[in-house]
Length: 337
Image (cartoon, one colour):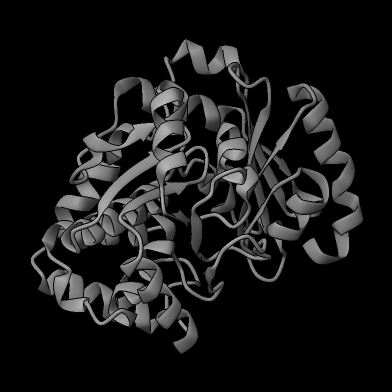
């Protein structure tokens, strides 16, 4: 963070008593981990803090400390709106455009509170008093660690806060294997371990708590895997019916797209999931090398993210979305070859 932003942040925190923390729709480990880490830190500063997220988060994150106090906007809109409208300060974590909050867009757009953004995605919108944006950092959780450090409060990070930060870094780096994992990331992780976290237990809680149905759904996903060898592309599709067959829960397809990316020679991988509630086709994209799925998703699927990991959505049917995806790929033959 720049010195002017640190100074402005301290001023905003001093003048704010009621603080809201929110993240993007479909919260993942980084979104929930960073939100809870910041929540626990601000509680230590004597602030009244509430975490409000657009919708539910995966079961394998519900062991995180204080997660039971998170308000789900889609389940309790009236109470959430009241809290947001009374807030002096709103932190937006792990996203950089308010529309990423789904149904929360209207109330956030009309809020009288000041905003502080902490995010590592590309091309941030300009809505915050303080924008702490750094696309070179692997996760928003690592940014929260640096944020607390910049405020001079690194000694306030306890085991609970460390558990939340570690979880977000671990999940957003694919267990530290992605290119965004730097030497600084490992130094942060070392400090968190020194604070007493059980890193093996965290990994077990997140990755080794599969249900029978979740593994069956993975099997179905891999059965549906298609490869376009001449374009070094692999993709997976899951209809709503297929997900219902295995009683799919929030987070059950987390990381499945990486199986497609792991195929030898593949540079672009995608998973397309039919969402019965929204009527949308949810898309996750991954790539290797310099092929930007952020730019690809922004151009064709109303999404975005990072160079090698992005998301998007389609209002077309599942078949039409797949047809569109396949029809677009030849335009990128040079980049994918």
